[in-house]
Length: 224
Image (cartoon, rainbow, N blue to C red; front, top):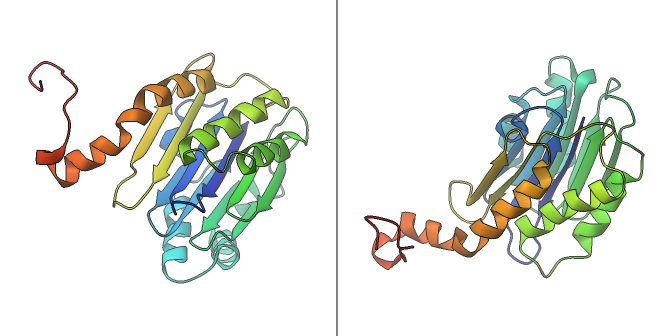
């Protein structure tokens, strides 16, 4: 069982995915982002090869719908896959194969695509998108975690959730935020706690990579 949301921030151009699942380490397999290109989630019965393939299709010039059509048609066992895509113009698309598990749902809007399977009810995904759209003044990772929280408040997944993650691409060649809870009884709450620690420092770690001489220290031993 999985809920996820892929999105583009219209204000900053950042891309991100937030996701939770009953499986361990969902962040290791499902979310994919690429700066200036897009955001993708591959889930249900996951094929991790599809995320990079979708981003490559977007980077080659295809829009979200065309990229999804191409990759879902060429995927092995596409009936088991659930895929979400948001492209560089904020166009979004979702593919849910015929063997998507349990109650499954999908919602697309400008700059956002969300989907889930084995849901407690069909309204969970719309609640996530509504929460995302109502928080445009906040940072993208904050909005995406908030969407997961809204999904839980709307009923969430049908069974216990064990892992969660948020992945963000800004303007650099690596994910500027990559936070994971791989196994926990309350992973979305833990993810929020980790983000609260991480958020004030996120930009500084980009500076440390690009210009260490201008980067602040945090007073850890050996780095005062």
